[in-house]
Length: 96
Image 1 (cartoon, rainbow, N blue to C red):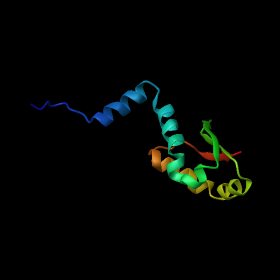
Image 2 (image 1 turned 180 degrees about the horizontal axis):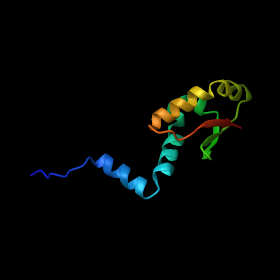
Image 3 (image 1 turned 120 degrees about the vertical axis):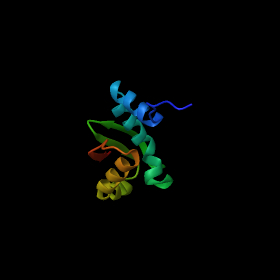
Image 4 (image 1 turned 45 degrees about the vertical axis):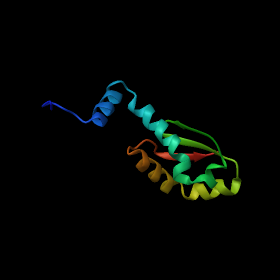
């Protein structure tokens, strides 16, 4: 038996998160969780604390040389992370 007004479960969840004001925190969580997958295990192993504040991803990097390399690639990383989540979550990345 099929109902006339059926909706995709994914769309319903997305709508619920938006209505409850949870869409942004959920997207931020997905982006922070995606860091190891996007940058790879080698870079991720030199990463410390990661958090988002005011649409800026803050990443603690334990190697000064790697920090410098990532600074040069931060625009590409920002775009890849946002693309991975499927939303414009961050506008910049700060490495500490």
